[in-house]
Length: 201
Image (cartoon, rainbow, N blue to C red):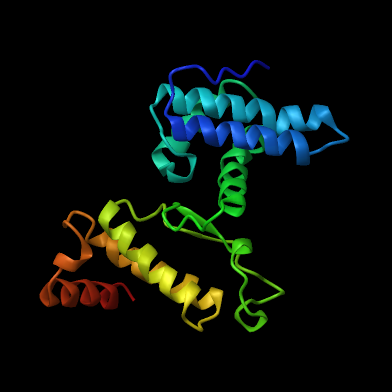
């Protein structure tokens, strides 16, 4: 494996990949170099190549369509695609958990980062992450992240309840994704949306 950090690539991406490479070499499968190479180092190298070619600047801002594009590359390289694709989630998680400050802008938040009271977490079925990838309108994504930030940081809802609310809000936002933002939707449009929901039920 040769890692060329002088290549033309966004600075944020290069720093992230370098940080991940260091973390993996120091902490992941220290007694099993083969497993580390197959499950982490090779997929990370492929991800670095893919993001460089696609001019992707930030691994924490990967969109679902970009992840799908990377998966098509991986399918050409290995049989066990699922194992290699774990590098996407593992990379985002490592970056989110080790950042000096919380990356509220990230498309996926990992709950380990937040020191939540025990009564807000279900120990038998804890919520591992909150994903905002499904909200494709960028302005709406910013708004739902602000909403989630309030509930995670200040509110008292359990994480499971926060996630359930986010599911409903994501559905509404995706329904109106062609608007500039959800803030532009009027009462008549919302009324029509909820009538559609009633009819489906």
